[in-house]
Image 1 (tube, rainbow, N blue to C red):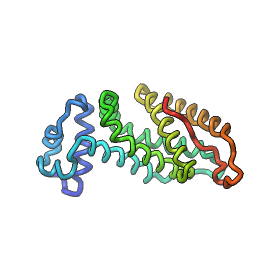
Image 2 (image 1 turned 135 degrees about the vertical axis):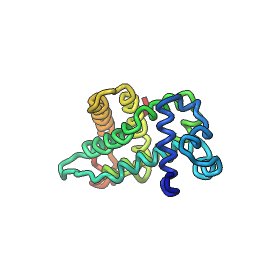
Image 3 (image 1 turned 135 degrees about the horizontal axis):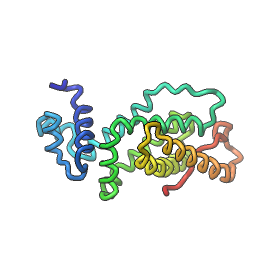
Image 4 (image 1 turned 45 degrees about the vertical axis):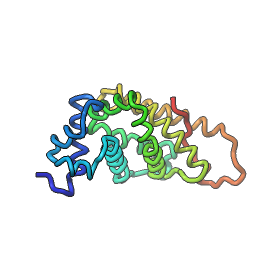
Length: 208
């Protein structure tokens, strides 16, 4: 019997496992509850919808990144730091790859659910920038977050097709997208009141 404190994460892992075996869109909350060996009332209390399960899962992915002790070197550029942070996020996704692929396929046919998750995606990318020591506040930070969302989604499409053990295609795509974003960032007009910290190249890309 799973301890009460561990049940929320157990339910999420169970849902990802079921998604790997069948279509996420066809799974019911009842099936997830039965597989996780929890009562319908407890399931309702913890996760009243499948969207709530997905939000909890993606928060756990973010937590895996935030708990990582990155060994950044002083000479690392913002792009280098962000590359390491985002690849760590892909590593976390890879632990439940088949389930994640099933969920992503379902979300493409369910724009309402995808929209419900969009705010969480922005917050995730804000934390990724903060972890990479890149400013993510203010009007410029909001633009950077939106650009990074597009960059992440573009790279995610490559990750979905990348079956290599070392994620070589994903790394190449992420590096290319970050370099492109860096070039676009350098083409923007400079503000006379920018701080030296703001002068670090930051990603800014639109969704593909």
